[in-house]
Length: 248
Picture (tube, rainbow, N blue to C red):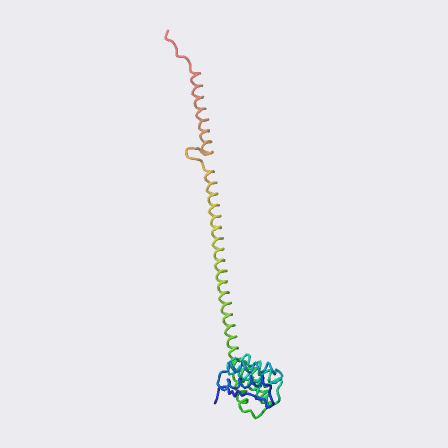
């Protein structure tokens, strides 16, 4: 089955008597067109259109040369202009060529509508039927691809968000662990400080080396008192002792 766009670009020649300038540019445009020098052909048809802008055939011929020169954007404008002002026969051909130009610009929705207009004006145009179906197929493929790309973008965005969230969770967990370590370190410092204070208090309560405790001092004082009583008793005895007798 064919899968290529069918193109049949033709030129429209007026049967009426033409002014010399218009006819000259039209003839030169046709000459260059047949020689496949489409850029020069387009320029001649452009000059002819300037001289007779109300004639849709001028716009159509200009569009045909632009299409052959692969200037599809400007060809689209000229075919659209011709289709809007032409009779039924020319409208059908202009709509068909407009569909081809839009197709080449990947505007498959616009091409589909243009081929539809061509068939409405000329239902027997077989190439327009084929191109209509081809444009419909390309439009479906385009929409499918667009949806796939959108899904891919969403997946990448979700992946980026998950990575960011994971990184934030890791940072939060790391900060939490750091806070716990700092709290634990502060608690240990406080416990150590408390132990040092208790040790200092105990050290102050204990007598220094070479010093007596209160109880030891009390016992020593009692011993001194007992010794003093004994000494006083001995002195008293010495005072009352009788003098030795004389041997007369």
